[in-house]
Length: 330
Image (cartoon, rainbow, N blue to C red; front, top):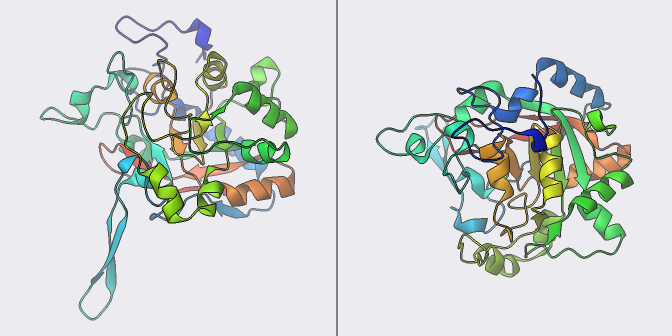
């Protein structure tokens, strides 16, 4: 299949501008289609020690949850005198997570990925179209690439504002990559990005959040969630810009992830969100609030910022999201 550049996208009649629904009308995987057996096998070449590094927070973190999401509740159910079961009551997006294709629509058209609508998700005619079961049946695996903005900024005495829509720019990411010996361009353009790579951006948000007390974090995490520029939920993230859009589209990442709450700087000050482009228009899974601290340290130790990344999304028919369930193998 030819993989068009963003400038060459020509959506079919009735599809939103910038849509890249190129995998067929019944597709529910989006860019996960790029994680072919050949590419997954190739990604295993990044493994040297075989050390496993989990990338998920405890289910009760971050605390309090962002965006007014539900607090995790755990109880233990006795099985008579012979044992016990767990009971969980949770929102998978209160902790390390995947945003699924049903999470965020292209706002001008109302479409979710590949023509999915709100009526497909909820109501008397709802289906499981583009639910998390599709990802669960496929699995997620490939070559992860860490861009450690947090470490790069710290070394240059740059002080990110974690609780505002502080923007990690395209030039920032290019410079971070260069400091790590990586050319942040697709291989087809002479760079080091391979089709199907999983982009992971560490801002240092969780390191900063963990340095604060609950009382210090709470006012930021519990700010009123008003969608739009006046949202009181404000977080560091990747900027909304044409250069970033071209990078994220044309590199053909199979997924993106970060250690901050929304991957992109929140709220957007543009007339669009990266969530619209990534999830609804291009079919790119978004991971958020991943614990990247140990992985970042290991990458510095190895002087290598690529690794094998694997995740088993929760198998929920019609599911909106999933706990991350992600591990890096280095």
